[in-house]
Amino acid sequence: MNEILMIERVYRQAENGIENLSGLSAALKHWYQVYPEHNFLHPCVIEGKAALVCQRGLSLLESGAYAELAEIAASYGIFLKEDNRAADVGREFSNRRKNIGLVLSFCVGLLASSRIVTAAELLNPMTTGMASVQLASPGDAMQASIAAAQNGDKVIRLRQAKLPSAQEVIAAYAEKQSALKVNQQAEISIKNLLKLAYQPEAADPAYIVNDLAEIADYYAKYPQVIQLLAELQTHKLVLKYKAGNWQAQAWGNQYAVDSVTITFDTRVAAQLLNQADCQANPACDISPADALLHELLHAKLMLVESRHFIESGGMQPTLYNYEHEREVIANENQLYYQMNLQDGRSRPLRKEHAGRLFHVNCAACAPTELVSAN
Image: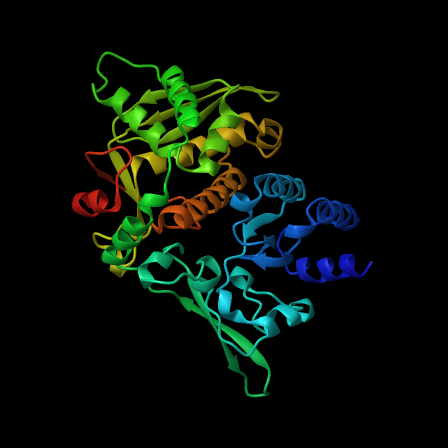
């Protein structure tokens, strides 16, 4: 029962309560037994939501373990993220982790350690070499530090982290390009999916087909994106070009979702953050290919998880589905974060559905192309 009490104590601070704690505990125990070499788990609260932090790089080290853990987390409404704490936190921190009773924004378990740890460190793996290689953090990351209150208690202070510069993002991206490999089998599968989904019209630009092929090549470099597209393979997805537009529309009734239509423009990117240092900074922007990922995440929730989508009011045209949008943004942040770790691009992680569109001449734009266009 100790682990149940511990989980309950942590998650009682979350906005979304966990109803079946004993079931969650049993599922995690079983997971422990199957994957004992990867059994680091840390329950916490991230931006008000119950979360679970697993071993750093688990999705790459053991995709099966990560997939099963993700399924457990999803079934209990828990946000799952991989730990990317700096390697030099030290043995004392690890030994005292079990005594942490309070975790605030971004899983900063600081009260058990005298060392100041920033949220950016939790989101970035510590590497040797140039500092820019570490740029995997979101554009709106917070920094955290410990201070002493007047009564002597330790408190956590949070402030907005400074964005990486365009030069830092470009350098990090260049450093990691050699490690990005295209999964050729996945590329063929994704290309076929996009080709079949696209319904061309006479007025469509001639470059659309080539752009979709470029996007398929781009997607095939990221395991998480490959998995997303694989989940959509057996569902009816329609892509229609519409200049300057990104939107996903579910079709069906109050009992079922029959199909999803995505309107898209492969030459329109988006600036998702609006900060003083966002001028010509790819840490604030996403490419058209990444914008399409947002719409595909909508499609996944609408088609693959249609029952939940319908129950949350998704097929009621008179209501704006705030819950659905929140879930899409949460999934987008998790996906972008994983992609940032692979390519160093620092795609922005956000809290709301807002942004500014701008035109580009590329579908899967590199950071330099985004800088020159914006």
